[in-house]
View 1 (cartoon, one colour):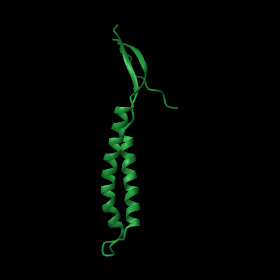
View 2 (cartoon, rainbow, N blue to C red):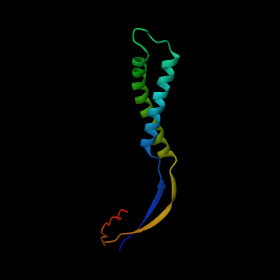
View 3 (cartoon, helix red, strand yellow):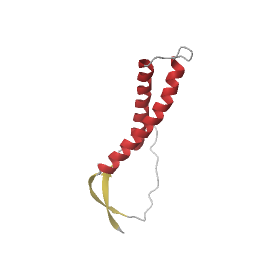
View 4 (tube, one colour):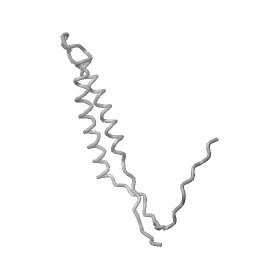
Length: 98
């Protein structure tokens, strides 16, 4: 059986950063909508929708960039582990439901 050393490291979940950025972008869009004068011919909700689309996209991208930045520059390893390759196949079993 072959033994191999592997490095175990922690990595941020990029998807979580992207969704947090997107939600933050929508919140910023709501603040901008409330703080700026709204054209009465258009209304508040369409104005918010317009800003929310761009806020979502920009926040999504910025959140992803923050996640990638943290992944690249804060590589924290938890150590080295030794793994052993096995040719045995273990059948998957389901736990009985109560």
